[in-house]
Image (tube, rainbow, N blue to C red; front, side):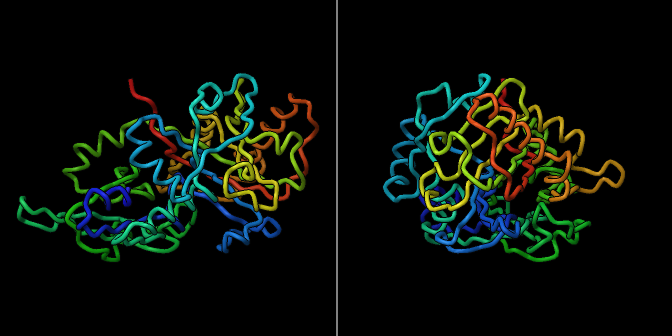
Length: 350
């Protein structure tokens, strides 16, 4: 969005605030050292295990999108077509991957890498990662020249998966982030009430109007499991991804090394994406808001990867689906991680 705004408004200075550790949001990628199970930041050549644990791919169905965005991105080496054998089990069809002949595209070296490169290539765009906006207030008395003052926090209190939460609205808006002529929100969770970690502290008049319609829109949750196996999964590398149906907890499984730019990843890495039905039931079982205190419940590795947690459930479901292909058992697991996407995407309307 920042890159596109840069094109549409060439004279504007654009500042991006992203509450994640790195820009990307639902197009994030993750790199880990499986021997210690710790995330790390290293050069692309040092990656031993990597995952696109959010958005798996995108399409370019319209002529306008292909001409204005896709073709320049391909020329710049930012994205490439994802080619491979996309398997379907029990009628699985992840966002039409198995039923549509339309090509799908991914960021070269990861969806997160694509976004970082895209932002970096846009002039006059300032990126502030690890910064959460907690208050947006009008700062101009002249309606013909509106302006907005933003305040927020940085570091651990900005992240979704830490317990270092900013309990009060005042804490969330403890640091001034500047004054701007216009504010564009890209996360519907920004319109949530103050209990939610992503609440942007929108003005009351805005919350009562368009933001309320956004907040009330049904959104679909998803979980992801990040798996490193000790050896190659039987059927790989011939299999790039698997769509799974039949009521399985797993909807999709993607092999990292099958994606352009990930060929140098040494370990056998797979991302398992839950079905929407499983995620809805799991969010009901373990909600995002504490029913007693009303506080936001952050992602916790002990919950995500523990016994009975989402990651282990998805891994077991993938093993069961894989067994139906009669290719041999899955190798032992070297690393297991998890991710909760509380608002992965909006439910279709109409």
